[in-house]
Length: 194
Image (cartoon, rainbow, N blue to C red; front, side, top):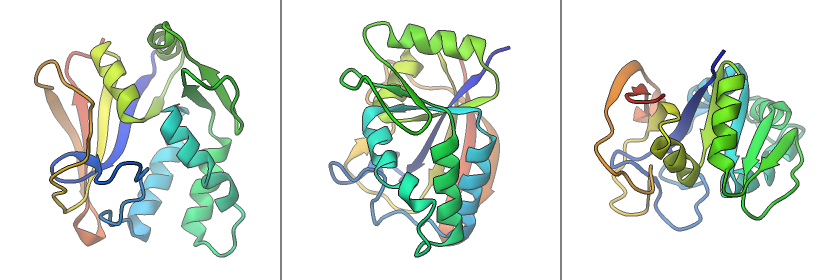
């Protein structure tokens, strides 16, 4: 039994995840329509758990738990709120010791070792949120897949998909799908994951 870590992210065509500092997934450059959000919901509901860095977790926790019951939002948004809130989560943080919404916290110098043990003892796909966390998993050869939703925009600046790469990242295309607004999903296997 071995789970797979899947780094899931909305990206620009130049592989930026935010244009402005602290956009936190809310940049107006993204084209997230109903069909794309339904795809997010379907994929998220098939994950066995999520692993998120503190910034991603805090962003999600500040919106999605309330969204699940907000009748002013579309049903697709309320559905994702329910999925995110109920999903077992691991928060990787050097500063937090407690989190709500079915979340356990890990941290410290052995956080990657703890995630390796989680991956080895769990099954299914574990969603990864956060560039810093994904970079650390990639460097430890623990990142199995990239699930990228590419929006038709070149940002030219901003936060990259990974904080750094020591060498070229070799990938194998597993799946591709197009959505309204010109968004294209690419799912890749990461070569060299252990």
